[in-house]
Length: 300
Image (cartoon, rainbow, N blue to C red; front, side, top):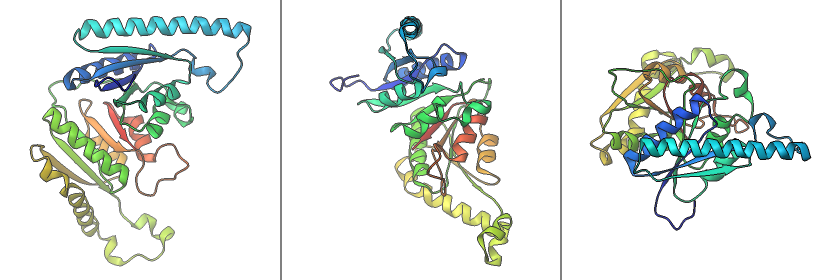
């Protein structure tokens, strides 16, 4: 995409899986609502060969066949989206990079509003690998990344909301701002979730802790005050957003997944307080990706 155009874009990765088709449909619908365009990206090089330079004359022929398959996939995806949304601006891009790198490259282009992928590759043991597309993308993209679930459950009769995890970290604050934007645009409810856990389990590891901090009521009130402080600056500027708060005695992952329905958008920061910098994602965002039944947006 060149910077000469004023069109803003949602970038979506496709690979022919059910999950990526769901991501494509979701992206096209969101782009139509927001007056954006859609850029559909496919990687010609198969995920199974990522990281290996084994191309010979035989493999070069296979690469050409893969490129042809990716082009056919892109043509089919573009035709399908154009039939569903005739007025939508749709472009395609084929890349010979790794799938994650192809999408990361596009995420840095001018005018990109978000990148969307399906969660294929996030199940089972595959999620532990650096090459997992959704995880690597969420850790390195400069724009919001939205991951659609592998199996999207129906939520008939349930109004969509925006559920955001708040923990006071910088990524969490960016997630909160994004969540307000989404709730304001969609005229839907925003649920800000702050989870706290008893300190007793950590006493041995952290050393002496004042006795009053073992009191659940005190810990819950501290968590509520911290949540109110995080919301303080954003609420007046977004007075039309209906904000609900949840202060929950639970692990953050449990609190978010139990609050959300398949119709809701969960928004989290890529890592919270105390995250290990060597990891691609924090444990909360990683686990939410695994367990969510609806879309998850991750902010760095």
